[in-house]
Length: 385
Image 1 (tube, rainbow, N blue to C red):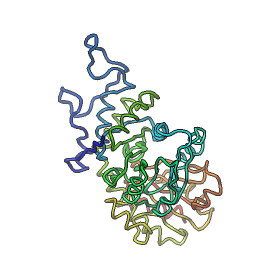
Image 2: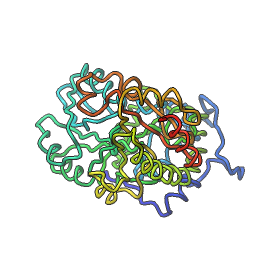
Image 3: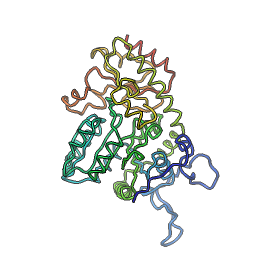
Image 4: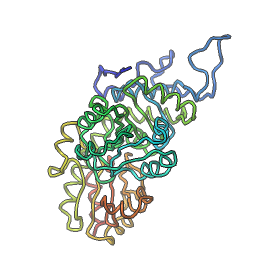
């Protein structure tokens, strides 16, 4: 059953107004926090539509409808973390199944795939998903899905979503897209052919570095039904208060994403001119190998930059000397963060895989915040020395 939602409003308006109603007949402008574990029945065999908050809660339901509206999906499910969402996805697969995945993924996803998925007999085939030819070549009789990040974390490679969808359709595969970096404000994978979109809601959707969350958005009602059963059965549901924080954060998503990108463009250009920066990885740079794909499928380039310094000593000095910028391993909040993938986000990857992907002792990742761009650049300048 295909039940893709067709938004009737601009994305920025959906960010502010969310779902169709605010679950209250009081006239409250803010969505109420229904901090309850269970709900009283009006009588035998009768229900208000809510029975137990693991199954559904009005605050979480409003958030899920908002995310589905933003992504143009059939429905969405909210989880306590992005990794909880990805763990639920694995329940769709069993022993002998294979998943094609981007070879440059967030380290936590690789850890999940190489351990928990492998323990269940699920094989993950890593390929350069920037190449449609490599994706098609990796399809085998046991392949059930293609999982992509675009842009990838941390090397900012871009995958052609529509082109990958064509391969998935041809081979009866699910296409799963991690849309954390660009969010539905800049990129909507479902209209491009994705079956499932996943998010670490902790990042840009929340936007304030104050809670953890994860999302799955489905284009198909049958897939949503399966995942909603998994969601309820495993109990990995987002709390009412955290749901409220996400609803509040999303209201400013459009404004924040514009500022993140504006700052990132300026900082990426500045970094390229610095003598101690060897290479800058940002999809919005004119000479990025995938810039035309980005322009075709996204309306912006986001706020994530990776850079390779001239030596390890320079990278470590930056981490020690930044003042305004915070040395932390998350991303997507209003504050600018610098991360050292080698020892943080990708520490669990085998050394040979890290090095093959360019994750070395000289690589830094910047999550560009919404501060004044000049102040961010000034801090980088003093830290680089």
